[in-house]
Image: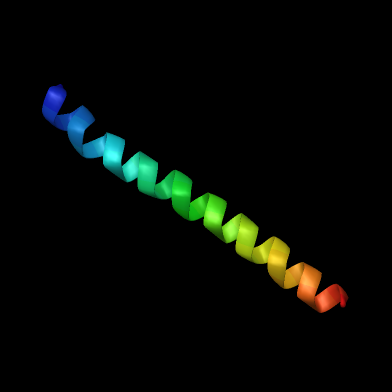
Length: 35
């Protein structure tokens, strides 16, 4: 179990950060297009 959690936790963190960055980038792209 510890090994599985140790492998999933970093992946979950990366997915979370990646998703947040994509949302922020899309929001910025939409703002640039609006201008």
